[in-house]
Structure formats: structure tokens, C-alpha cells
Length: 135
Ligand code: THU
Image: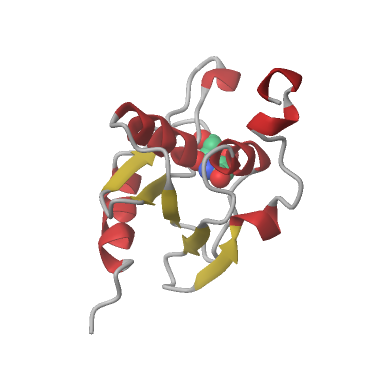
């Protein structure tokens, strides 16, 4: 039986090859498995004005939301690192806005993978209901 995440892994890897990371040299691809089983990918995009750069996970998130997706089952992150790398804090927060219980999978070149649940990586996110206006 094929792993349903294989399609997501493949999309993340393809996105990684498109990453624009001339400053760090660290290419990242990310693909979201949406609630309706569609897959939306993104890559990191750096900038000569360094803080303007965006991570692969948030690039994928923006692309998915633009397609009307707001619920996610999983994100797969692919890098060329030797060990799987966890998503940065800003990406954890951005993903938690939509699906705090989603799976997070990170895959390294070696084929090694790390698996988490987002709520374990970010136990107390600031959520929409944290805002007084949302009560
Ligand atoms: N990066 C990601 O795309 N995702 C992460 O979760 C961590 C870091 C990118 C940002 C920057 O372009 C490069 O990796 C080095 O930090």
C-alpha cells in the first residue's frame, strides 16, 4: 500500500528545487496536505534585504489560503540537511492559526524523517480567540 504522504513528500521536494536561497544556501520546500486532500507547495524565497525573505512553510500556507484552503492535515518539509530540521517559530505560529493539530513531517536528504504534532512544537499558540475582538 502506498503512503498517502508520498505525494506530499514529492511536491515538497519539487518545490525545494525551486527555492531562491542565494544568501543562506539553505533550500527548503514545504507542501501542505489540505483537508480536501489537495496538496499545495511552497519554497523559501530570500531577499537582498534579508528580513524580507519568507520561509517555505509560510509560502506554501499563503498559496493554499489563496486557493481557499484553511484546514490542513499535514505539512511535509524537505531540505538538503543531513538531519531533519524543525519548522521555525514564526512558521509554527502561522500554521497554528489554521490547524494546531496538524502533523509536521521533516525529511532530510538522508531519507531520515522527524514526525511531530504541531501542538507539541507550539503548545500555547496565540490564536484568533486570544484577541479580545474575537470573543
Ligand atoms: N527556512 C525555511 O524555509 N523554513 C524553516 O522552517 C526554517 C528556515 C529558510 C529561511 C531562510 O531562507 C533559510 O531557510 C535559512 O534560514
